[in-house]
Length: 75
Image 1 (cartoon, rainbow, N blue to C red):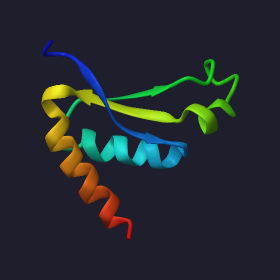
Image 2 (cartoon, rainbow, N blue to C red; image 1 turned 135 degrees about the vertical axis):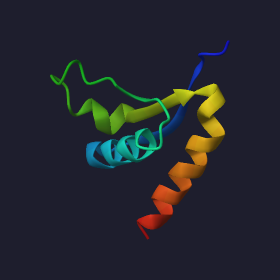
Image 3 (cartoon, rainbow, N blue to C red; image 1 turned 90 degrees about the vertical axis):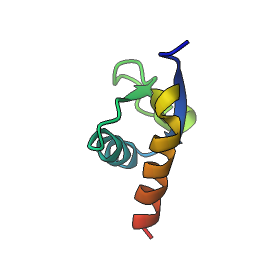
Image 4 (cartoon, rainbow, N blue to C red; image 1 turned 90 degrees about the horizontal axis):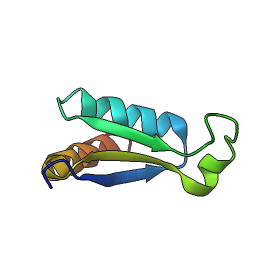
C-alpha cells in the first residue's frame, strides 16, 4: 500500500526523538511520533517501549539519509 508507515528509528529519550522529528519534518517529509505511555500517565514506559519515529514507506530512503546526517552532526 502507498501509505504504509515504517519505523524509522526508536528513541528512549524524548528530547532526542523530538529533535530528530523536527529535523526530518523541516525537510518536507511527513513524520509521525508514536509513543505508548498511557497518555502521559506512564512515562516510565518510554524506557521499556521507546518513542518511535514513523515515515511513509516511499519516504524511507530520504528520511534515513537525513537521519544519518542528523546523527553524525551530533558527534
